Image (cartoon, rainbow, N blue to C red; front, side, top):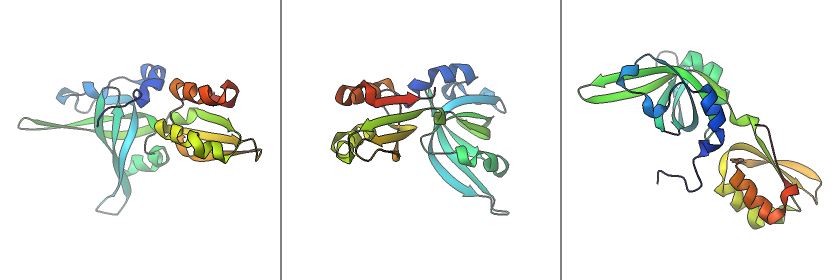
Amino acid sequence: LGFYASGHPLDDYKEIIEKNTNIFLGEIDEFDNRKNIVVVGQINSFVPLYTRADGAPMGKFILEDLTGEMECIVFPGAFEDCEEAIQEDSVVILEGQAMVEVEDENVDIQINVQKITPVTSAKRVYMRLNNIFDWKGSVEALVAQHAGSDPLFIYFEDEKQVFESKMRVRGSLELEKEFTDRFGKDNYVVLGS
């Protein structure tokens, strides 16, 4: 639908955005051709590509920040260095160069990616539950409502073991409140910034 029911996924990263961004995607225009940019955003819609000449891997994706979204292209040299950081829904600091093409009245802007630094790996969410039935009963649905890119670890009291979930969350205050209202404050921890 083009909007978020529970706030923008980048709302939790405002401090990182303020510290690292030199322009917002919505501010880039036809006068910014070849401008070096640094922006914090969320990676969406990654498409792997290969060069025609030698089949070298490269790719493109949509980067979304608080003001808009823009197509980014990662050429083979940069792709080798950035490949691990290109994860769907991950929040990253992206450094690159604006590439602007103006044809008639159409303006096409892409970012030529030079470096990607992940920022979401700094946050890890831990939940403690009695057993798998708590997970299947309500927590799985709650986690799905707060999907994001932060790793989720669940300690099951019955098994006395910690498991890393395949699901990722946005370790937000909203998730914390909903979880702790049901399971108590002692059963939820977020580590990292």
